[in-house]
Image 1 (cartoon, rainbow, N blue to C red):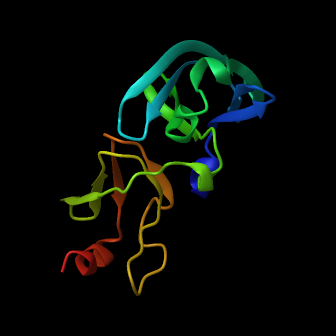
Image 2: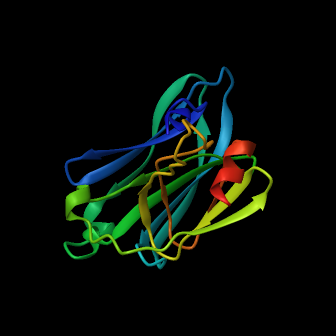
Image 3: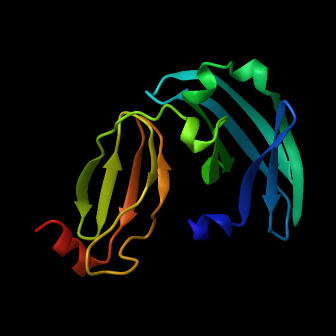
Length: 174
Protein backbone atom coordinates (compact mmCIF):
# COMPACT_ATOMS: atom_id res chain seq x y z
CA UNK A 1 0.00 0.00 0.00
CA UNK A 2 2.83 2.36 0.83
CA UNK A 3 4.58 1.93 -2.52
CA UNK A 4 1.46 3.24 -4.27
CA UNK A 5 1.44 6.35 -2.08
CA UNK A 6 4.94 7.22 -3.28
CA UNK A 7 4.36 6.71 -7.02
CA UNK A 8 5.55 9.41 -9.45
CA UNK A 9 1.95 10.18 -10.43
CA UNK A 10 -1.02 10.11 -8.07
CA UNK A 11 -4.77 10.62 -8.23
CA UNK A 12 -6.33 12.12 -5.13
CA UNK A 13 -10.09 12.61 -4.63
CA UNK A 14 -11.07 15.22 -2.03
CA UNK A 15 -14.58 15.83 -0.70
CA UNK A 16 -15.54 19.52 -0.72
CA UNK A 17 -19.09 20.08 0.59
CA UNK A 18 -21.36 18.35 -1.95
CA UNK A 19 -18.61 17.88 -4.55
CA UNK A 20 -15.66 15.60 -5.14
CA UNK A 21 -12.57 17.28 -6.52
CA UNK A 22 -10.04 15.06 -8.23
CA UNK A 23 -6.40 16.13 -8.20
CA UNK A 24 -3.42 14.74 -10.04
CA UNK A 25 -0.02 14.97 -8.41
CA UNK A 26 3.22 14.70 -10.35
CA UNK A 27 6.68 14.29 -8.85
CA UNK A 28 8.25 14.19 -12.32
CA UNK A 29 10.61 16.92 -13.51
CA UNK A 30 8.89 17.12 -16.89
CA UNK A 31 5.27 17.62 -17.91
CA UNK A 32 3.18 14.85 -19.45
CA UNK A 33 -0.18 14.30 -21.09
CA UNK A 34 -2.47 11.74 -19.54
CA UNK A 35 -5.95 10.28 -19.66
CA UNK A 36 -8.11 10.25 -16.55
CA UNK A 37 -10.73 7.49 -16.47
CA UNK A 38 -13.52 7.65 -13.92
CA UNK A 39 -16.11 4.93 -13.36
CA UNK A 40 -18.91 4.56 -10.85
CA UNK A 41 -19.20 0.81 -10.21
CA UNK A 42 -21.65 -1.01 -8.00
CA UNK A 43 -20.27 -3.74 -5.76
CA UNK A 44 -21.61 -6.44 -8.13
CA UNK A 45 -19.63 -5.25 -11.20
CA UNK A 46 -22.17 -3.06 -13.00
CA UNK A 47 -20.76 0.20 -14.40
CA UNK A 48 -23.33 2.89 -13.58
CA UNK A 49 -21.57 5.94 -14.96
CA UNK A 50 -18.22 6.75 -16.53
CA UNK A 51 -16.19 9.60 -17.95
CA UNK A 52 -12.83 10.01 -19.59
CA UNK A 53 -10.80 13.18 -19.89
CA UNK A 54 -7.44 14.23 -21.29
CA UNK A 55 -5.38 16.04 -18.66
CA UNK A 56 -2.05 17.83 -18.59
CA UNK A 57 0.33 16.87 -15.81
CA UNK A 58 2.63 19.77 -15.02
CA UNK A 59 6.03 18.97 -13.55
CA UNK A 60 6.26 18.84 -9.74
CA UNK A 61 2.69 19.92 -9.22
CA UNK A 62 -0.73 19.19 -7.84
CA UNK A 63 -3.66 20.24 -10.03
CA UNK A 64 -7.41 19.86 -9.79
CA UNK A 65 -8.34 18.13 -13.05
CA UNK A 66 -11.94 17.05 -12.46
CA UNK A 67 -14.88 17.93 -10.27
CA UNK A 68 -18.17 16.18 -9.81
CA UNK A 69 -21.29 16.97 -7.88
CA UNK A 70 -22.19 14.01 -5.65
CA UNK A 71 -25.91 14.17 -6.40
CA UNK A 72 -25.17 13.79 -10.14
CA UNK A 73 -23.44 10.47 -9.45
CA UNK A 74 -25.12 8.93 -6.37
CA UNK A 75 -28.26 9.13 -4.28
CA UNK A 76 -29.00 8.08 -0.69
CA UNK A 77 -29.50 4.44 -1.69
CA UNK A 78 -26.70 3.95 -4.22
CA UNK A 79 -24.00 5.71 -2.19
CA UNK A 80 -23.75 2.68 0.14
CA UNK A 81 -23.32 0.24 -2.76
CA UNK A 82 -20.85 1.89 -5.13
CA UNK A 83 -17.24 2.92 -5.53
CA UNK A 84 -15.78 5.66 -7.69
CA UNK A 85 -12.81 4.13 -9.49
CA UNK A 86 -10.18 6.41 -11.04
CA UNK A 87 -7.24 5.51 -13.28
CA UNK A 88 -4.53 7.72 -14.71
CA UNK A 89 -2.93 6.57 -17.97
CA UNK A 90 0.22 7.99 -19.55
CA UNK A 91 0.87 6.80 -23.10
CA UNK A 92 -1.90 4.22 -22.63
CA UNK A 93 -0.26 2.67 -19.56
CA UNK A 94 -1.95 2.88 -16.15
CA UNK A 95 0.43 4.78 -13.85
CA UNK A 96 -1.89 5.15 -10.86
CA UNK A 97 -5.37 4.35 -9.66
CA UNK A 98 -7.47 5.25 -6.68
CA UNK A 99 -10.93 4.65 -5.29
CA UNK A 100 -13.43 6.84 -3.50
CA UNK A 101 -16.25 5.55 -1.32
CA UNK A 102 -19.16 7.88 -0.67
CA UNK A 103 -19.74 6.41 2.80
CA UNK A 104 -17.60 5.41 5.74
CA UNK A 105 -16.71 1.69 5.72
CA UNK A 106 -19.16 0.82 8.50
CA UNK A 107 -22.07 2.12 6.40
CA UNK A 108 -21.18 0.32 3.16
CA UNK A 109 -23.32 -2.64 2.06
CA UNK A 110 -20.31 -4.82 1.36
CA UNK A 111 -21.14 -8.15 -0.29
CA UNK A 112 -19.85 -11.53 0.81
CA UNK A 113 -17.15 -12.44 -1.65
CA UNK A 114 -15.20 -15.40 -2.83
CA UNK A 115 -11.70 -14.63 -4.01
CA UNK A 116 -10.20 -16.89 -6.63
CA UNK A 117 -6.48 -17.59 -6.25
CA UNK A 118 -4.52 -19.15 -9.08
CA UNK A 119 -0.80 -19.69 -9.46
CA UNK A 120 0.26 -18.24 -12.83
CA UNK A 121 4.04 -18.60 -12.58
CA UNK A 122 6.67 -19.87 -10.18
CA UNK A 123 6.33 -16.78 -8.00
CA UNK A 124 3.06 -15.12 -9.00
CA UNK A 125 -0.56 -15.60 -8.05
CA UNK A 126 -3.63 -14.09 -9.64
CA UNK A 127 -6.55 -12.96 -7.50
CA UNK A 128 -10.04 -12.57 -9.00
CA UNK A 129 -13.49 -11.76 -7.70
CA UNK A 130 -16.97 -11.17 -9.09
CA UNK A 131 -17.88 -8.67 -6.37
CA UNK A 132 -16.01 -5.89 -4.62
CA UNK A 133 -13.46 -7.31 -2.18
CA UNK A 134 -12.52 -4.54 0.23
CA UNK A 135 -9.18 -4.36 2.07
CA UNK A 136 -7.73 -7.71 1.00
CA UNK A 137 -4.94 -8.71 3.32
CA UNK A 138 -2.78 -11.62 2.30
CA UNK A 139 -1.03 -13.60 5.01
CA UNK A 140 1.33 -16.49 4.71
CA UNK A 141 2.01 -17.95 8.17
CA UNK A 142 5.64 -17.91 9.18
CA UNK A 143 6.63 -15.14 6.74
CA UNK A 144 6.97 -11.39 6.81
CA UNK A 145 6.17 -9.34 3.71
CA UNK A 146 5.79 -12.40 1.49
CA UNK A 147 3.76 -10.49 -1.11
CA UNK A 148 4.64 -7.67 -3.51
CA UNK A 149 1.28 -6.04 -2.89
CA UNK A 150 -0.98 -6.29 0.10
CA UNK A 151 -3.97 -4.62 1.73
CA UNK A 152 -5.88 -3.49 -1.35
CA UNK A 153 -9.38 -3.41 -2.80
CA UNK A 154 -10.16 -5.69 -5.71
CA UNK A 155 -12.87 -4.31 -7.96
CA UNK A 156 -15.54 -6.71 -9.19
CA UNK A 157 -14.66 -8.47 -12.41
CA UNK A 158 -10.99 -7.53 -12.23
CA UNK A 159 -7.84 -9.45 -11.48
CA UNK A 160 -4.67 -8.60 -9.63
CA UNK A 161 -1.33 -10.28 -10.03
CA UNK A 162 0.74 -10.44 -6.87
CA UNK A 163 4.34 -11.60 -6.70
CA UNK A 164 5.31 -13.99 -3.95
CA UNK A 165 8.80 -14.88 -2.80
CA UNK A 166 9.48 -18.17 -4.54
CA UNK A 167 10.07 -20.23 -1.39
CA UNK A 168 7.01 -18.73 0.24
CA UNK A 169 4.78 -19.65 -2.72
CA UNK A 170 5.82 -23.28 -2.35
CA UNK A 171 4.52 -23.14 1.25
CA UNK A 172 1.27 -21.59 0.05
CA UNK A 173 0.41 -24.23 -2.55
CA UNK A 174 1.37 -27.37 -0.60
